[in-house]
Length: 415
Image (cartoon, rainbow, N blue to C red; front, side, top):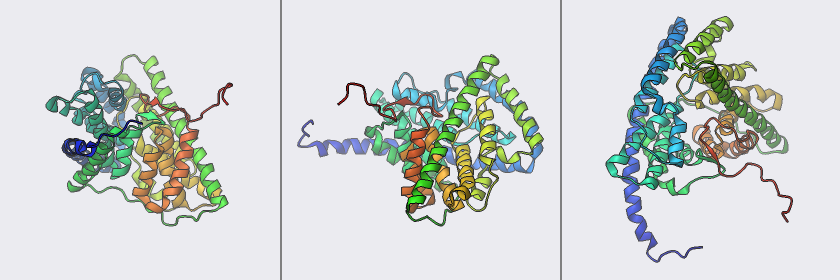
């Protein structure tokens, strides 16, 4: 171990001051962008829910968004994966056009009925806005990596109202089994300040009530482990199906704007044929209901199918809120089978499916505590880590690297 310098603590003061200012600037940008996005998203969702016929315009909306990205958005089409790639191997500053493109594309997707989320939009806006400071502050490659992580943390934190989870997400999402602690302070500052900035703009986040936290016992622990295994497998199914459908559509339809056009036709037809309006958009209402009453046992699969179809055919948005829906309704369905309370299992599933799909068990455990209270923390940790282990090495972010394998196999010559 390297011997610390006698005055190392004094040398840290300029570092703290530097990143306190930079991270606060990033937070102000990301928090304000998230606030605008969330307010506009609420208006778009409310209008769509009062005009259900608008789903028939989804193919046209998909064509327009696809055309815009085809003409001016190719450099930023990779979305979150572009940000992760730039952190791993910095090459060039993320184009500012990512912000209006992903913002407009996501709002249009929600306005006309695609099943997409919102985290991807907030993270991309936070990362792209943060990266513009690279020129202004003349940051080197190492500092630029930290800047991008802080932007991602700020976007995630402000869109969900979970600053601790947001800070860790910015560190944990880059590589499976490994976190970068050199960016811990900037990410924490950016996440906390961004959340406060978003709240200052008048944004109100969704509230969920778990209520009863079951006591520890042999069966209760076993039940959460069993559920965690299923949550991880469903998370893996979601990630794998989304990537495979996306690859199939790209091979089959070479002209990119036609992909969401075709996807819109399929989704709109399925919604009306199956009377499946509950599976489009964010689905916050159904997520809240899953904490209060029994849901249909197939709701999680319905949301999974519509979200895979939306993302796989090129509609813009995030994956996380649909994963919350899938996890909460799956937990709700498992509750009577495992003899556990509905709200408790919905809360565990809410975070655990996301943990498995994104390979972020620490961030999701913190998210559970921030959303549902500290008492659920040990249970969330069990479920999230189990889901993480059983979801394999696939994930919703293809640029995510493998830092350490989840299963460590002993070599033949090991002692």
